[in-house]
Image (cartoon, rainbow, N blue to C red; front, side, top):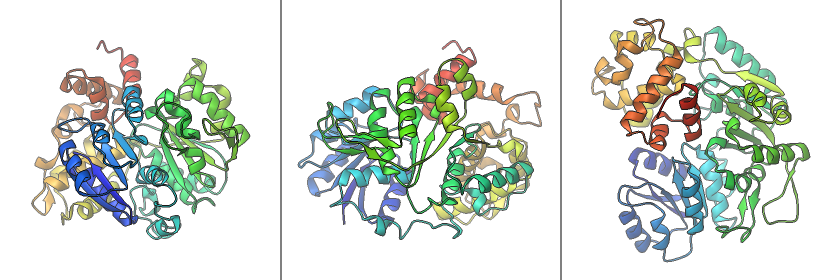
Length: 451
């Protein structure tokens, strides 16, 4: 059984990742600092090291120099900075992955890093993978697969998913942040004829321009500085299945050309290789920006836009799903109870009042985070008002107290607050807001913020 060491100062995230990899057949130990990581590396022979870039006592890159044997190192970073990723690979890291990432994405990188002789076999992995039409309850599956949503907007979305899923059409998924664009993409994959093949998700906003070709198409050992091993690209990893490109509007123009060529020719070439590889991949993309405007401004290729937009899906915001909020809230209460080993039975009437009047600018993702936090803090049978975050119960941001307060105004206010709290450090502010740095810069420019 392959042994993996995870060094991550976010305890709950580390434990969640440990449990996931345990279920996939790996033996996993966790640590929380560079010092602890170096000690564990001396005591045990691991097959792979997965470490966060930013740790309390030092940067995770320092663990590379302390290795007593040559094992692959994967760097996790929520910053997605070019300098960080390139520096890590120059110092010997096998690869990096930007937070937030899906379990499937990190599993793909781990299996690639370990190689065929060490990685868990796909047949073993499929034992715990949810199958089509079996009531999948995982967070990555479509919530609507096992929830009876009642709003007209949700029913229309469900109808469209059911129509397009069995086809091989490329689908462009649009909607506000937090509406569940990746969840929708996974639902399309699960209901397609490709459901037994890989679903690979890529955050285009987190890929440095210098590494995008390697991320998409892979590379051969020695093909550039820092390429110490062969790497399988996401196109090859998704062969036979579905490749989901999130925040595709953030892809640099040069990389758009490469992507278009791969989609047209249905073959790719690893960096440093002279041979081409045929790939059969369905492309699903998502964005919270208007690509038509980006095309007019010359920031996004029109031919690529039409290639990706054979069918479009608009994901409704939570406030447009009248009647669904209570269903989502009860669902997240149940899943949070299971995750945190709690038995919270429900919400007080006061809490229901707040949930129903709040504007939910962060949509379903924000609702899930609020309820999970409240479950963690609650010691009684029901969630009370004291367990909700201050910004949720402040009347300034509720629909009832200020109907003229628009979502754009709310988003602008949240950006200003995040910047002030982080002393105008845009990387930290983007992480707090759960968006990429590029998206934050775009919003700052859009709202004319002088920062």
